[in-house]
Image (cartoon, rainbow, N blue to C red):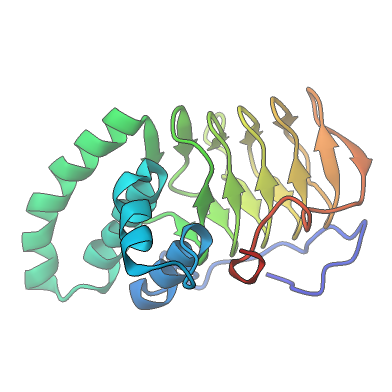
Amino acid sequence: MDKSASPGQVPSPERAASRHAGIPRFREAWPADLARYVDPAWSPLRRMRRVMTTKELWAVYLYRLGNYIYIEAPRPLGGLLKLFWKPWNDWVSTLLDTHLMPTTRIGPGLYIGHTGGIWINPGAQLGANVNIGQGVVIGAAGGTRAPILGDRVWVGPHAVITGPVKVGDEAVVGANSLVVVDVPNKAVVVGVPAKILSYSGSAKLIRMPKDH
């Protein structure tokens, strides 16, 4: 994704090099995810308590573990681990009502604000340091291609992004909005259908690890 986003610029179309192109390796992605929830300056006990009591982090971890099992793990090991991961993931996904497929392309630093009612299409692509709120649906209607989200996109609670749309870097999708057309970089969109309100971007809404 373009990290030098400028207001009003719509990201150019992307073409995946392969089915799993763009999925970061576990050792790169999981530490970045964890850093969105846990401040390294905290005591070990406080960090452990945060990990053990934050169900949103459980959902992210299971997704990343699924990435490793389905994509990175050597074939004999991957096949064995699937036997344990799949029922565990099915149970946790149902319990938390948060559904992330292991082959979905999501960049490092994923942050889920609250679990519940979250569905992300397997064909969707999310950039780095994306924030997802409760009840968010990122899907594909009628067999169309799924959405592509850039880096540092903030998606508010109960927003729906559907179809072959592109949401630019540092964009903001307001709560309860419906996105069915491309969203430029740094645009703030709200409403049904979503319309551009400003180009103030997501910088004030997304807390990066250094901001803790």
